[in-house]
Length: 217
Ligand SMILES: [Zn+2]
Image (cartoon, rainbow, N blue to C red):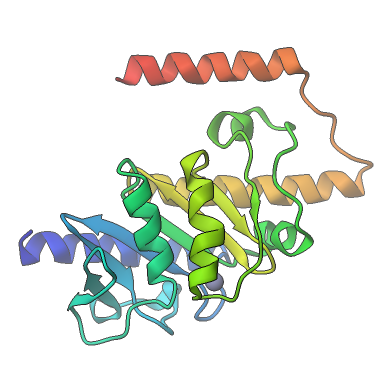
């Protein structure tokens, strides 16, 4: 992949890092973003603020998380990103952040599984909670990556959320959707609790999803 192409992808990461910052989903230096870049992976460097990235803050690593190009240390969660890419060839962009509403569910060990908004049933089904492990540890990778066999978004207990999609735009949209869902879910609790969709209504949504997958193939 040429330098122009790599620079273009870095600028996409910068753009969506800014958006995460604008929506208060990446406080201070929390979180990290990566995109698949041919055989390698572009990932934000350790200690960078996602809302204030420059091209030099994004490092190229290989599938063993070794640096290919870049002066900075890649994110401490690089092994989690690598493990998800190795598991899911259809995922090309990953966002991990400590967005406040989804993280509130993560620290409470409550999965975002209640079928209360059709859009979230459609996109996620359920967002499970992976058991706690120290950030940046091998145990975190072991506890979390396996959930991506069945899910595109996973809460990290006492930590945050990680989301993967076919490109960075869709990863960002899923992140915004999950965070809004968590906010609505939490607010509904203050109002006495949301009314769940019925099994029939949920099945209709899954049918709709199945049909939209078939027509997009
Ligand atoms: Zn984190």
